[in-house]
Length: 601
Image (cartoon, rainbow, N blue to C red; front, side, top):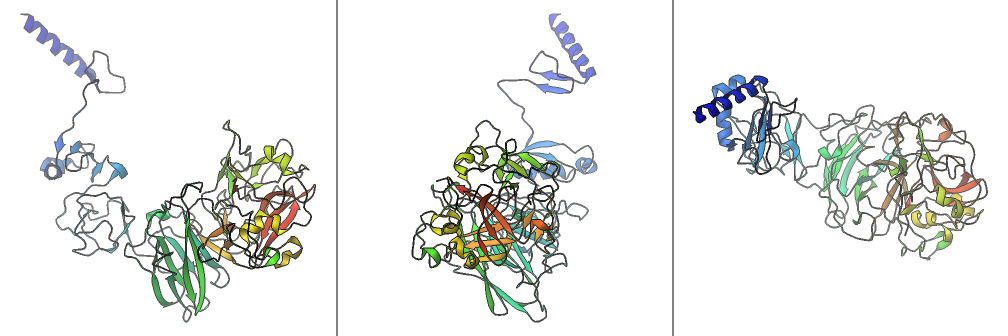
């Protein structure tokens, strides 16, 4: 009788729970109002059905599954014992919970094989190691691209497929490579505005697209090679087209890391006729460990030689975002006012300009805070790409706007055409906008005025110029181993190049945004054991009337970078360059200039 009563009670309770469509297992507490089933345990878990890939495909092939595969079967979950991953049916494919949300294969009647490191047009029998499936039942692609991991993948209907790999993933793209340059890209011929360099962070390897029109496409010839491809250039590779990004040369290109060059290395592109179009890529990430660098990894350098109509031009390549020397302390000057002298003031420069994390298209000015602040008030940061100008800063803003950062191109509703007198030795504690461990470079002592500054006392001159000159001979500055042009950093080379705010044609990218980037100058070290380079964009300045950046701002034609050295009570020293020369100059402290920080060693 007790057994019958208990059974009836249990049935009644279960019936009541089912009527409410809510159940708790493992606890007497009520489930949350938003759940229909709760499992409560401190000693066990939910065990999904355990199926191998073969068993899962058998399930998928059943009449019942096929009838409801885009309806009631959606959301079905299993644990795949072949891949050790939880998998969910999306209505078109099994989606794995393993890293990268891997798109898993469905059965295919015809399959082809592709090694995950293989790149190029897919053909039958290629590298039978990894396989992948990429076509839905109606013959259309399941996705424009997806990421693969090691395992068994099936390919079908492969016409137009191209695989690019970074050795841990494989992106499948539908379409053909870019082989022509549109009218909106590279409006000037190579000899007017050339590509002077290419840049990758330590962890980047993706394509850098070099595109330029020539004067006579029917007869002008060009070829490309990697200099010392077996030694200093061993980390580079080439490809003779513009890649597979359908959004290339627009305002919204895809990430360059999604476009890796073929794993079969190419060190030369034979002579071609027509407009210049090719890609440079890194074969691996940079892991040159060196604890003397801020990222603990030492940048590496190499050169690509582009020969146009028998005239060679060097594209200086750098992989590494740690601050580095251009000229090292032991690199003796070969002329000028420091002939045969060592560069005891040479400094390591960041490859990036400074900006403020608060600046955007609606917040056009904001206090940056002092770089040594530890209370979270500091808002300064480096830009994402070397070609981006970042924010403009006054040398020493008056009380209340000491560290204000200003948008690189937009109108600002707040600007004070004023400055503080004094020297950086006193003002630096309240005005230094570089992050902790960094500072503005010097042109001389920071506790005095310098009407004519000697190269022997200048970090800027010793760090960036092969032939350092004193100020009195500034018209001779900068014509040694500095190059004016475009820089392929995975941003400038992918976006549409336009006229700058100041009216300079084909000189700017995203000019009206906080991410504005520009043509500029590449400083290089010709020493055979260095090859170091540093790019500085010519983003112009914010004039001392400040509210707007117009033709007087010189964006796309001039670059201005503050030092921490004063010239007088109303002016301060800066690095100033254009397409013809570069030198130390002194200008009003109330101007807004870019800031490029050096490591505070």
